[in-house]
Structures are given as structure tokens and as C-alpha cells.
Image 1 (cartoon, rainbow, N blue to C red):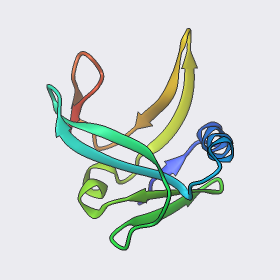
Image 2: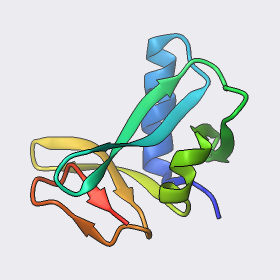
Image 3: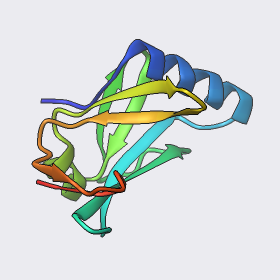
Length: 107
């Protein structure tokens, strides 16, 4: 499988990287935290690391470390605006349950 971006998310990332003036893509991972056990970590990547698994979607590179890939494989990242809130939305087929605050999940 792979990690993908919707066209809307890819456009947002490309625009942000252009404004930022540096970066080669997105780094996506998970960390242990929250009420359900895992939380997403999303940051802009300035370089590809040797251990990274790299994917490309709509012209944007996505880098994932091997430990996180187990939890993220098949995830689609979208960018949504809902009312006054906007941000990335994770459509992860591996998630079995999320916490009430929406910050963490388990598989």
C-alpha cells in the first residue's frame, strides 16, 4: 500500500513549502501519547533520511519512518476547512478507535 494526499492537501503543502522557501516534502509519523495510545506527527521535511520510506502523491513527497509505517499504511491525508477550523484530516484504514478529544487513536 502507500500513503497518499488528496489534491487539496497536496496543493496546500506545495503552497506552504513555496512560502517557507525550503523543504522536500512532508514527514508523517506516530508517537505514543494520548488517551487511545497513538497520535499523528506531521512536519515539513527538509531532507530525506536513509531509513525513510518515501511516497509521492500529486507531486508531493511523503516520508515515513519504518516503525510508523505499520500504523499508517494506506492512509490518505486530506486538507479540510470546517467552519472556522482548518487543517489536515487523516483517513487511516488501520484505526480501530479514537479518543473523545480526537487527538489520539489505536489500531
